[in-house]
Length: 294
Image (tube, rainbow, N blue to C red):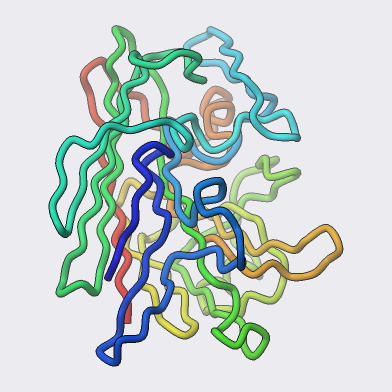
């Protein structure tokens, strides 16, 4: 396995490839778009100190309203703040690297509190698995809400592109009914939830957040990728997109995350099981995700 990391672009993964015993390299985490700039659109990036969207880029915590800078065309603040930030390399080896971002060292960070984010990558199990540790540290003097996760892309089709779509399977319990990717009601079981548990081919357009994630998902195509995630990842986002002309994109995303979309606002309204963590000064939120290849 070969893993390429952009320390200056959010500690993002630029590529993850696996070489067979016959010397054939297979992209494992990839957007699969020919000619695309991997630095501008990395195949996997870190989301922290929140995941997915914050509606209208604003939320209330402990009675105080906080306004973020919108970072999406819909006016929301999307995917946290660290994905394009420079990280420092703390240590590295031929099979591992640990990187850190400290918000207090940077201007214009889109979060009301100071925090640190550490990411560690390690190739393990005879180069058949990649473990990713993502952690958030409260470096402020007051508590704050947070969440984190990964946004990995996978090829939607087999190598010959149109011959077969990949199959997605995940242990989820329910799905949030959403409008413009913002939940509008509590999560409930439905046909798409059952289909994802049983496994479905990535043909239909999907962009949903699921609750009750048991920490395991599978993406099966030319290779089989098994995702194992730590218990903090209570939610899973599945993204199977289409272009504006309804043509299918070449990629999908299966994202283990700790919190639901717009979790800060749901938490403020008293919604249960949002996955939002409140960190005290000096407290860590520690998570891990493991991608196993077969």
